[in-house]
Structures are given as C-alpha cells and as structure tokens.
Length: 209
Length: 286
Image (cartoon, rainbow over all chains, first blue to last red; front, side):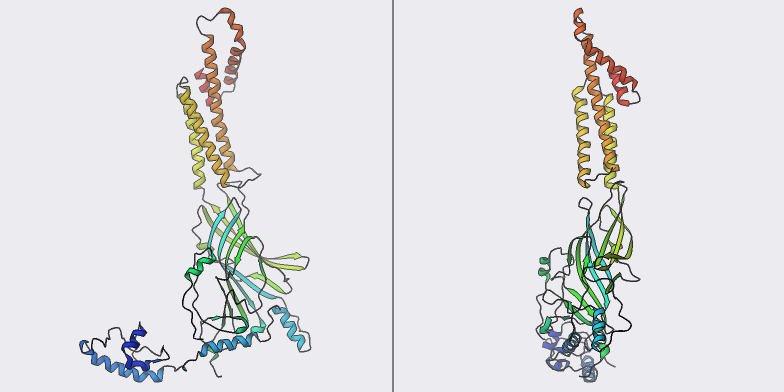
C-alpha cells in the first residue's frame, strides 16, 4: 500500500524535514507520500497524537519511493531538449514562404517527377471565437468584436514530427537561436490597450533552460 | 535517444513579437474591418503542430468592423452585420479558405448579453468565390442578426404624443391668460425640439425616411400649428375688442375695415376647415 500525501508547501517541508530530503532530487518532489500538514518537528513529535504510527507510515512510504518515482538526471531538462530537437527537425529545410500546395509540388519535382495527381488547394479552415461584442455604433456604422481568430490547415511538411516531451508544455520560439524558455503566459482579459498587459506581466522568468 | 512518442502529442509554439510564426501561414485579410488588431505582440498567439501535419493557429483579435445600418423602421428595426475573411495573395487553386466545418463560424456570439438595446439572433455563414484579376479568391462570409430593443426610443414617442395632448389642453385655459398660454406652447415646442435633436444625433444622416424622425416631425407640426392658431385667435380677439370699443368715431371704421375683414375671413375659413381641435378652440376663444 502506498500512502499518498499532500504537501502544500514543499519548501517548508524541505526545511523542516531535512531527513526526508531523499524525497527530493534537484528540487523536484518525486512523490508526495504523507500528510505533512500536521507534522511539526520543531514542536516535537512527542506532542503529536499517533506520531509513532505516522513515522511508521512515513518509513514505509520512503521505502516505496525509489521504486515508484521517476528519477530525473540532475540539472537536465529532458523535456525541453526533446521539444527543441523536434522543432529543429520540423524546421530543417522548411521555407515558410512556400505554401503547402507548392511544397508538395516542389518535393515531387525534386525527386524528378511531377506530382500525380496534381496537389489540390490547401484547405484552411477558420473560426472566430467571440469573447466580447460591443461598441455597436449606428452613427459610425460599425461594431467592435474581440476574441480569438483560429485557423486550421494541413501542412504536409510538418507530418510525422512525433517527438517526446511533456504533454501540455509550452515552448517560446526564439527564432534561429532556438533558445527555449518556459514562462507563464498572462493576459489581461479586458484590456483594450497593449500597455495594460504589461501591468499583469509576471515577474517570474525561468532561467533554468 | 530513446523516448516515448506518446508522451508528446504535439508541438506548441507561442508566437510573440520577437518570434514570428516559424511555419507558413495564410495571409488573411478582413475585408470589411475598419480597424484590425490581430495577434498584437503582447497578446501573443499560439501555434500547435500535430504529428499528422495538422496545424492550429490561434491569435487574439480586436477588430472594429463596418456594418451598414438601415434605420427606416427605427425603432422597430433589425440589422444584419457581417464579417468577410479573405486571402490577400493566394488564389483558390493554392489555398481554399472556408469556415470550420460542422461548427459555428462565430462561437461565443450567443453568449454576448451585454449589448444594450440589442438582441443577437442567429448567424449565417457562406464560403464565397470572388473572381479577381489574379484568379478566384476564396472568401468566408458570416453575418448575424441584431434586433433592436425599442424601449429607449419608445419613451421619445410616448413623450412626444403626451406633449401634443398637453398642448391642446391649453385651449381650456382662459384666452386672456396670454403669457401663460404662450409660455406653455413655447416650452412644449422646445422640449419636442430637444427630443428631435437627441434622435438626430443618435442616428446617421440618411436620405431615406425614418419612421421615428417622421413621427417626431409630425408631432412638432401639430405643436407649432396649435401655437400659430392661438396667435391668430388672440389677434382676432384684439380686433374684435377694438371694433366694439365704445366711443369709437363713426368715420374711423374704414381705417380698420381691412383689419376687421381679415379677422372675419379668418373666422370663416377656420370654421370651414373644421375637424381640427385647435380651430374649434379658436372659435370658442373668438
């Protein structure tokens, strides 16, 4: 039985339960296995009810950690590197001025033959998600719309670019430098001015990559 | 390196001012947009590339779009506003632009309940081929119906009607109370004039008749007509009083004969055009 625990403040846990530091490798909690919220070594375990039982459970959980938790390599961000690798592979020889239809033709003629059948037009689907509609001005004859402009298309050059990584992660594309730096995105939902976003821009910027 | 492909279902690019889209993108234009902020740098945009080659690009958009209002039936009018998305350089042989199949063109539109005075109706969409010199250009058109909530304008209509009624009630005031009646008339005319100005300012200058403007103009004509009638009646009363003035010299009659005749003619013509409450009031005052 593996007892799942919840540690809301991992730094506190790290500081106070230094003898549990095997829980962490390179600052990443491998597995939360016990409820530390009532565990306070500073006030002494003698003041706690069921301390012995808790210690027993903790010891049991500690024993379970090495077999159940992945062990990342120190100082390495494998997910980011993998995504970078995938992006590099995707963009090798990619000319973004060539539309997908011409790209098919180019690829076919490079192999010495015209494509058969001739490639049809690339279908681009679109949609506008409306998050706000206002400013109906019958004098000026206009209305304001705010939302998200969405496009879908199929790029054959991007096909088969499977790569590994962490699903749902984000990469900030930095052009040819290829520097990948994750940082949280924040957006002022009701801002009308670009400057308004700056006030909500998070101060945190990861430098781990 | 060995890795698990299933852990990495897609590539995600966050596009920003310093990192333009790394892949080919269609050159979209919004044909009837007055102002268009698409993918502002600080808004960023998202591009996802799937293993199948499917590319999804989402950008934040803020747009002011032209919409021609037809106000002939104001305040019981409905409007149809639209949006046309097209391609600038590519023709249909290369790129075909269509609305997302099986989905609404403008999802989220039905949730917009914060528009004062308007109710949003159903949307319609069409994929249109527009012949141009360079070739056929694909365009995606969408439109939605806006129905006006007439309450704010109805208030103007009701007010204008009751001011006319009030104006006519003025005939039951003693004709001798000239200052009071004139003040009542002028104040009501000014109020209706102000209402007309407010309505004129809320709509564009149009060459076709607008029901609300016509109605207000009719109310104004009735008010002015009522006031003019009172002026004439008051004039006739003064003429009558003058003619009946005791001690008037016999030979003086011819001096005011024309004046008297004018008043008498007005009395007859006013009676002839009966049916108007103002005229009947004028007769009573006479």
